[in-house]
Image 1 (cartoon, one colour):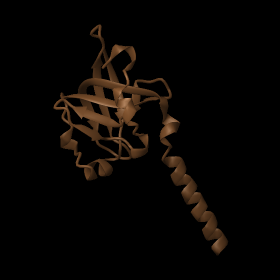
Image 2 (image 1 turned 90 degrees about the horizontal axis):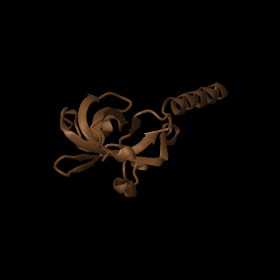
Image 3 (image 1 turned 135 degrees about the vertical axis):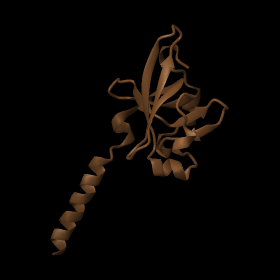
Image 4 (image 1 turned 30 degrees about the vertical axis):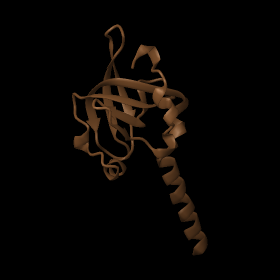
Length: 140
């Protein structure tokens, strides 16, 4: 019986590890990004919330970006709630670009218009030096 139990535990742990991917499997830590834009959509769902910004470049072209952040429960424990993030507000989000080249990124730090910063990403994803990194294509 203990052999079957051991196999069952290994299978369950393997499934859990596969279901929740590593940060570096999806995001490129060599490509930090920091963008400012208008919050147009918020998906407050597990396993990670998603924030969507419309970012305007120096020529006035608007590009939509999606940022994956921590799970809702983790954010709530940090004092960030669904109502803390308001559609239409201007936010600056720093993180890392998606490896697939899409307009998606991790959301690690959000800076509100009043200058407040909040950790919205996973702790291991945070590198404070990246807060000062320039954004691609002249975006701020």
